[in-house]
Length: 102
Ligand SMILES: [Zn+2]
Image 1 (cartoon, rainbow, N blue to C red):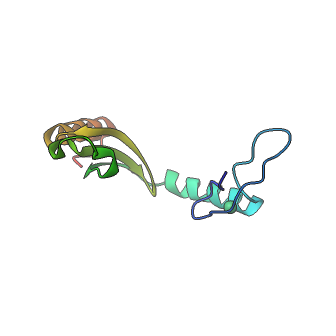
Image 2 (cartoon, helix red, strand yellow):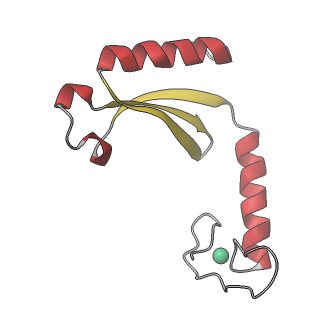
Image 3 (cartoon, helix red, strand yellow):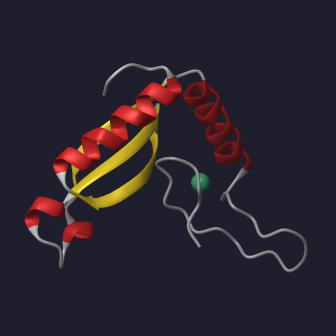
């Protein structure tokens, strides 16, 4: 398993007991915590984008995705959409969040 800290690719030692480690070191755990705090201060935005790998096997017009972003972190909420459907969904989410149109 690889360290969960942003930008770290160190392997995480498997512990014999207790909760499995997520970070390779205390420094990485602290760094990841600070990065989450920084991201938490960022506003949430909604993005409409064209997917790449996830659009395989779908017709090209159904390659659109909707993503929520806060700082450097993001979550894809829908893939395989037509552009109009993606923009409608993004508009509804933006309206719900009160962030305006994406
Ligand atoms: Zn690390």
